[in-house]
Structures are given as C-alpha cells and as structure tokens.
Length: 126
Image 1 (cartoon, helix red, strand yellow):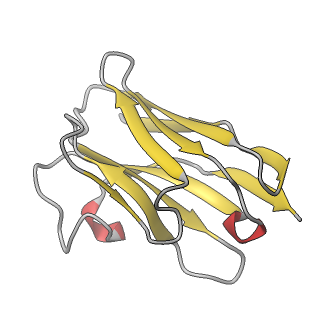
Image 2 (cartoon, rainbow, N blue to C red):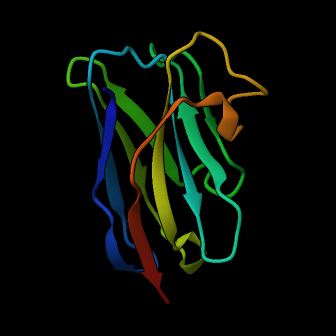
C-alpha cells in the first residue's frame, strides 16, 4: 500500500509564500515525483517535477523562477516552495509519484504517475 500525504496548503495574500510537503508512505520507491494543480473548472495541470536524484527538475512556465521543487529521499518527502504567490495560483495541489524510470508521454503528463495524494488547497487572495 502506497500513500502520498500532502500538507502545507492554506490561505495567503498575494506576494506571500507557502511550502507544501508530500510524505510518501509505503515500500515503493518513487523515482519521479511531481506537483500538479487543479483550479475550479479547469483541468489538472503540471506544476513542477523532479527525478529521484534531483539531477533533472522541470517547471511549468507559470511558476518558473518563483517556485522550487525539492525532495529529501531519507525522509521520503517532496517539497514545493512557493514564493511570490498570485491569485491565479489558487487551486488544489496534488503530489504525484512515478515508480518507473521513465515517464509515459512525458514528465508533465498525468498518466506518467502511478500514485496520487488527496490534494491540499492553496488560496491566494488579492
């Protein structure tokens, strides 16, 4: 049984920061991990991702330069440091894990990930 537990969401004002965490529980090694988000009425979209060793990191254009993804493999935890938050960042944020060494369709595709967290709400007021 694998479980991804997100935390760290909340309500902040524009320009402030939040750090999301995602703890991986279970005996499966996550090679690739990522954050996705879904705003009301919109599709779930890729935000940021990285390989297990951190050699490769990827960001959506909308968050590039503002946010940083990282992971602690000893703690089996993924992080997303979100700075300079904007109202358009308001969404439910999901952690995702890939147990393979490849990404089906690409690292930014939902089908590339096998495990998902329950989501954490981030709301940014203007």
